[in-house]
Image 1 (cartoon, rainbow, N blue to C red):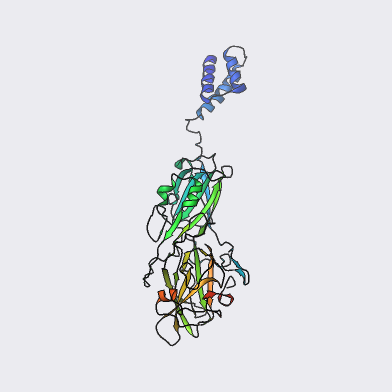
Image 2: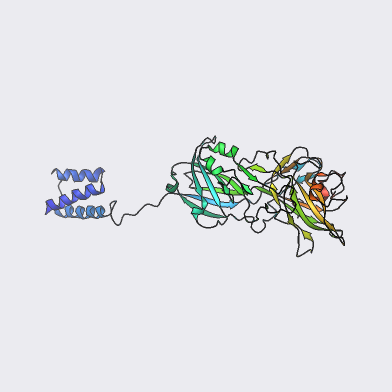
Length: 408
């Protein structure tokens, strides 16, 4: 009986892979150099047999949870505009003090491009994660977990992440596309992806009735960058909208009714992640336009939300150039008929234009001078057919009196 128990002890010991003093003790007993009482032998046998039942492959052995990467997702509320006027004071754009309109924080799709993390951004692309696999639509200020093994990622490695929201990275044409980025990025380093990846859009050209290219307020393109450190286990991705927004209010409603506004001379492409790079020199003629709505409280026509463009930089804007992003406003004289169009450059008079993504630029009409034009394109290009929205010398640029800034 004792020898049978000893044999069971040895089998149990081998099953659980015991090492160290306890295994040594068992080996000594097997050679006859360790004295045990029968009671002790039986007790150890029961212990070891119980441990063998919990060994790998046993029914009671817990399965370790798979390693995951946690993503904390949010939309950046705003960035501080960097352009300030040497003579006129505050910066011209703001997001932090202007709440998002309905839909502007919606994320319908999310793609994560994962790279080995290197300080010089030389890490290779190792995975592309389609956020639809995380389930349903995305809710901001929440966390999502990604199973690392599914994408061949290691829980012990650090990764850089480039995020793209509300844009299909496989699309090479269309109103908002990346030129087929998904197929190209697999062979890139992080640095190459940041420097080469652009977002493209198209406008209506000279067709003044075509507003089909308007970005949807509930599907605005966004991007983010982050680093997942293995020792931390999570990464914050703050999505930044890739567009600027223009709002328009009017103080001349007793004389003119604001009917519409359209964007002209907008940049046709921008870098997705390299936010320090200026827009490419390609510009559109007419991008698209929106109709004004009536404010329920004031009863005045206004445009708040819905009018967007890519960011833009022009060193020395001219009154009627084709590189400066401008708005063509449609006004109707009170008691009159038809629509008269006027151009307004969105920049300080006599200074450069710097429109930055994720900022809101607010215009307030305070005066209308000039004959205007019955055709939008003429208002965009032809001298003498524009509006001076505040007393200025005809440069058609904004100045202190019609810039609403962050105060409204």
